[in-house]
Length: 415
Image (tube, rainbow, N blue to C red; front, side, top):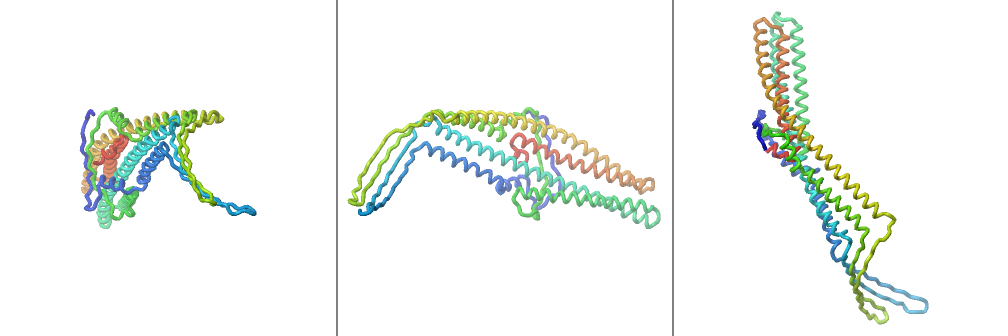
């Protein structure tokens, strides 16, 4: 793949001693998530179906027996016993049994691919919840810093108001901005806890009391979008499963056509029976071939063939629809990622300018040349710039995960 550029990003947040890494969170979810475990059982069901299909092609043995007693007026009671062992083997089924085995083998492969896709989807959901938690935590820290700055301004203005050098309207405005900042902090902290709860649910954890996240490091390799589209067509487990389902659809047509063909079976049997008068048991044995051919079934077989052909057409349409959807996912994630990288640069510049604006407004106010509104506007502007930078920073990680998921390998983005 052509490498356009490489970017190494570290999202700086205070590390927590007991924090769980993103890769560890994904691994825990893969081991404990009940929805994924339920999907995994589909493989076992498909394997059992294959055993049944193979057993239908083998020898079947049946044992039967009977015991009878009868009595009529004026005669003694008559009793009889009999037992019979019968074996049968289908010699020709019009390829019905063979096609059932082939279809069952494909079903196992489909179940495995769907399980792989479910794993990748779960990793993607974990990674998204983790990044959301990091972004909400970083936003909370920005709001806390803004709240501290505004509280300090309020304290200074209160002192000036008490000294009679500032009007009450300045103090009221400072108090309002501080209160607004406190609300922003509370909301972002609540959003952080909600995102932790979402993450805990995916990991099958009962509580978020001990759950914390840590900074994420990501190495980004961005090539041509066409390269990612090719990777998606090769890697996506759901697209590979679509192809196998089409193979199954073709087999189902042959299964329906088998209804027009005869079935030939070989049978052998042995029995033993006797009457109560002498209890003399006499054995018997039999062997032979049997054939059946459904010559006319009222059009049932014809309808089953037509249904199988329509189902195959639907599978082709579903595959084309999935391919288009995957291509759209790749292109969307790719373009979002490029925009996020551009925003990362511009928002950092905006933060630098906002910090300079705040410094100038503060110094002018201290020198008696500025007004309170300039300081408050500068604080709000700086907070907005910092939160925009946080958003851009985590959008880079988020869209990188989106792109990795679109090509069918989300784990690639979080290793």
